[in-house]
Amino acid sequence: MKSISDRAEVSVDFPSKAYMGAFGRESSFEVKVEPDEVMLRIVRSGEERREVSVHLHYYLLADILAQLGEGLVHHDFLDQAHLDKLREGADSLVQALKDRKPAKK
Image (tube, rainbow, N blue to C red; front, side, top):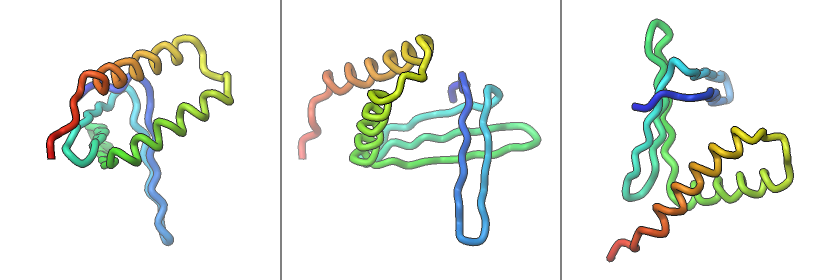
């Protein structure tokens, strides 16, 4: 598990109820890369323990990344520190994808 450097908020809305939770610097996360999906797990330990897991299949993850890119093109509200961290993460992903060969079927 890796420490969260910022903050995450999660909400799940059902017809008769909603669940919301915040995860800050006292929380941690992990990402698991699986054959069919990526799993993101965020954990807040302690008295108010909570945990959320999100499983994203690769086509959906690709769509999310594309939408993020399109959104950033139209907005200039991020400061240099946030832009640098996003570039660092995106560069890491791009390098990993360039180095990968497709699985044989």
